Image 1: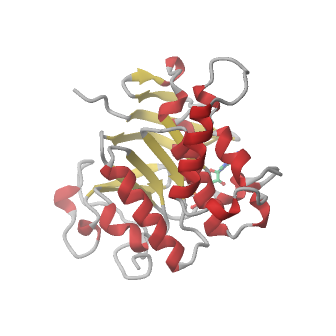
Image 2: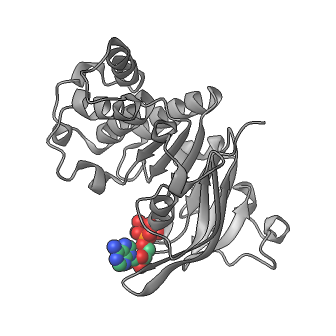
Length: 255
Ligand SMILES: Nc1ncnc2c1ncn2[C@@H]1O[C@H](COP(=O)(O)OP(=O)(O)OP(=O)(O)O)[C@@H](O)[C@H]1O
C-alpha cells in the first residue's frame, strides 16, 4: 500500500501564549491535491509550517509518509515552497543556486555537486520555463517567476509531497495558468500537493479536496464544489453545518 504523505491529528499550536491552532486534523492521501483555505490569520501558514516541523506543536501528532515527524529523516521526499515574502527575504542567490539548494537533501557528505545534481537542476529549471534566467538573482525576478523558481527547487529535490503557501498571491493570470499546468503535470506523475490559497483561479480544476480553517480550527473538509451553494452539510465530517468564512460561498474568493 502506498504510504499516506501527511496525517495531522489533534494539532494544537500556541504562539505568544495564544492558541493559533486547536485540535486540527488534516490528511493528504497519496496522489491527492488538497487546498487549505480560510480568512487571513485563521492559521493556514502556521498549520503547514508545523506539519513539516518549522513551528513547534503544543500537542498533537504529525506523520509524514507513515513516520512520525520527530523521526522523519527523508527530507528529500518533502518540497516546501514558502510564502513569497519568506522565500525571498535574505536570499541573495541566483536561480541556479536556489534550485541547487533543493538537492542538498540528496547529498550524503558535503562533497561537490554530482552530474545527477546538475541534471536534476537543469531539468527542473527548464520545466518551470526559467532556462534563460539561470544566472539571474532571485530578487530581480517578478513574483510569479520567483514562485516558479521555488517550485523548481522542490522539483529538483524530487519531492513526493509538495507543500505550497499561497503560490498564486500577486501572480498574474498567465503565470497562474502556467503554474496550474506545471502542478497538473506533477500530480499526474504521482506527486501529492497541499496548497494554501486565497483564490483558486486556474488551479481550481486540479483540486480534489478543500479544507477550510477558521479561527484555528477546521470548519470544513470536503469537495470544493460543495463550498458553493446552499447545502454543504453532507460533506462536513465535523458535525453540523460548516461555518464558512464570510464570502467563501460567494463569488468573491472564487475566480
Ligand atoms: N511568530 C508568531 N508569533 C505570534 N503570533 C503569530 C506568529 N505567527 C503567526 N501568528 C499569529 O497566528 C495567527 C495565524 O497566522 P497564520 O499566518 O498562520 O495565518 P494565515 O491563515 O496563514 O494568514 P494569511 O492568510 O494572512 O497568511 C495570526 O493571528 C497571526 O497573527
